[in-house]
Image 1 (cartoon, helix red, strand yellow):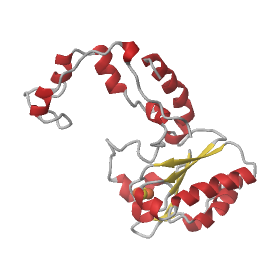
Image 2 (tube, protein in one colour; image 1 turned 60 degrees about the vertical axis):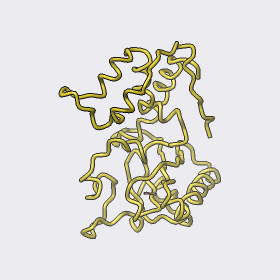
Image 3 (spheres, helix red, strand yellow; image 1 turned 45 degrees about the vertical axis):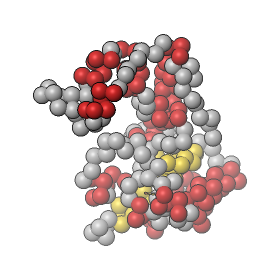
Amino acid sequence: MNTIEEIHKIREEKKKELDLRVNTNLDTREKHILVCHGTGCTSSKSPKILENFRKILEEKNIENVRVIKTGCFGLCAKGPVVIIRPENTFYAHVKPEDCEEIIQTHIVENKRVERLLCKDIDGKLVEKLDELEFYKKQKRIVLKNCGVINPEDIDEYIAFDGYLALEKVLTQMTPEEVIEEMYDEEGNPVESAPHPQQILKIRFKRVPEENFIMRKKKDQ
Ligand code: FES
């Protein structure tokens, strides 16, 4: 992509498609099966789980279901983890041989595979990710998109406001304003700012829009 307008277009188009990843009340026939590809789940065969889901969906000729690899959901001890959106069902310790049952029971018959639902610390069966005590006590900030988007698909990152800050810096702010942004009212660097010595070394230069080049990774 070569222009900021192209990024806006991708964001708009992709956002609609990704709504069912965040909106658990969405009334849609489409489903996304999210398979964790973080380090822990990958070492417990999540690539095979992903492959099996895709193969079974193809064999059964099931449409409106997509299988997506994601980053770590944060609860690696329960891995491999599979989440089905928009309902947000959380399946734990999934094995490659469980894929057939998940497709048949959850996708085709619209029921839950109870034996794969996650148990909370009190032993209670939990159906949805945000019902787990582990998640109730956290608010993800930097990693808020981890487990929601495919980290290898740059369009998904853009849809979730990726590069928005960079765009603002390049098109709306002066170098002085950018540096100012890094300090609070008392003149101390804000938590996310670089070290003051690094700030001094920063040389911001406005980049003409036609030179705004970003590599777009091919869709998989
Ligand atoms: S690696 Fe899968 S939940 Fe962390």
